[in-house]
Amino acid sequence: MTTKTKWTEKFSKAASTNSGRVHVVPSKDGWAVKKEGAKRATVVKKTKEGAVKAANSIKTSERVVVHKKDGTIQKNTKRK
Image 1 (cartoon, rainbow, N blue to C red):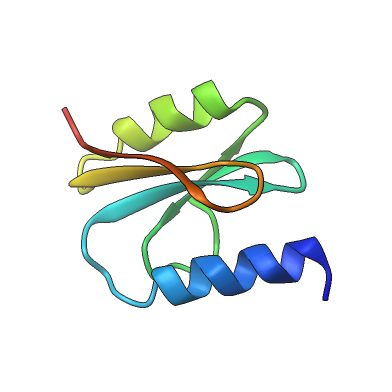
Image 2 (spheres, rainbow, N blue to C red; image 1 turned 30 degrees about the vertical axis):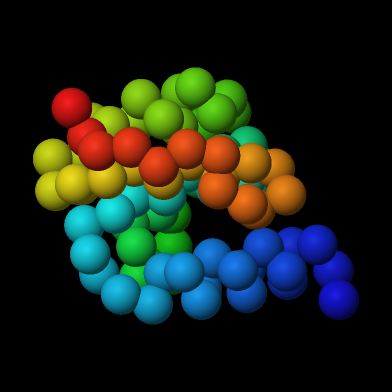
């Protein structure tokens, strides 16, 4: 099993509901911002910092969940 498949499985399992959470996850082109339950990224940024800013700007998000490169959760915060 490739690393990408492991990340996809972890994210899919965690993203099985639409609870207003937005995830910042690693992608092949940098860092992706995905609404929970979505198959496609809302936006992809080259840096994690840029992706976190983009995630915080999504008006419908209640929480932003930032993942590490290995797919585990680094930070889970309420949107300001």
